[in-house]
Length: 81
Image 1 (cartoon, helix red, strand yellow):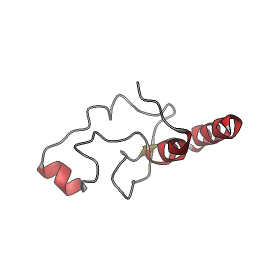
Image 2 (cartoon, one colour):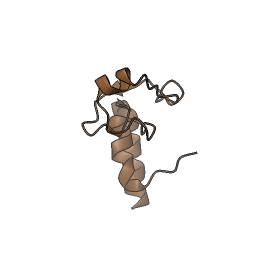
Image 3 (cartoon, helix red, strand yellow):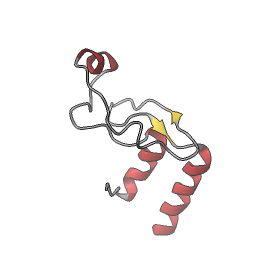
Image 4 (tube, one colour):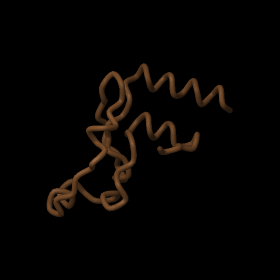
C-alpha cells in the first residue's frame, strides 16, 4: 500500500499514480523500445474513470481523477491542513 504525502495529492489527482521506477523519466518511444509495461496501470484506475493528462516529467502514468474526485481530494487536503 502506498502512502502519499499531502503535497503529492494534487499531482496524484492531475496525473495519476507513479510509474514503476524503471519507467520514470523515459519517453513513450523508449518505453515501447524497451518493451516495458506498467503492471499496475489496469489495477489502479480512478473510480469514475480516468482523465488523461500527460505528466511532462514522466513520473506518473497520466491517468488522473475526474473533476469531482479532484475536488474531493482538494477538500480533504484543506481539512488536513
